[in-house]
Length: 146
Image 1 (cartoon, rainbow, N blue to C red):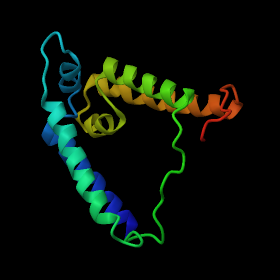
Image 2 (image 1 turned 180 degrees about the horizontal axis):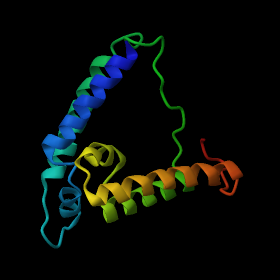
Image 3 (image 1 turned 90 degrees about the vertical axis):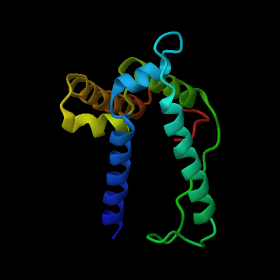
Image 4 (image 1 turned 180 degrees about the vertical axis):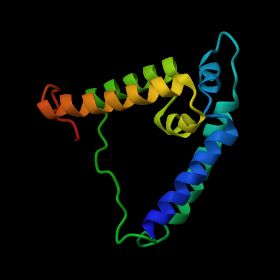
């Protein structure tokens, strides 16, 4: 049952990205171009997602346990450390250069746009390289929640 609900959630997410135009990297790049052809529509998508999540969390927290699990899986790490800030900066730089974050990149894959076909494998290599570097212990994770 969890697999079915996961599939349906992903389907709704993907449809929302395509319908809102967020699978198009030009939409994101125009949102980030404040001095040029600025397009504020991404802010409305983010605002809609924030309101939906806010209401959803308020409803879910009234339950003792999730519908499809025994307990809620809540992150315990709350520190803002060097690794978090560095990762967020790298993510933002990649988002600003490519116009994609991971969700829209996967959603745009069936469109076979050349930018997507370059971005997605590069993102996967970056994910692999980051995990490999962390696994080698090359990053000082002292004090970092892993």
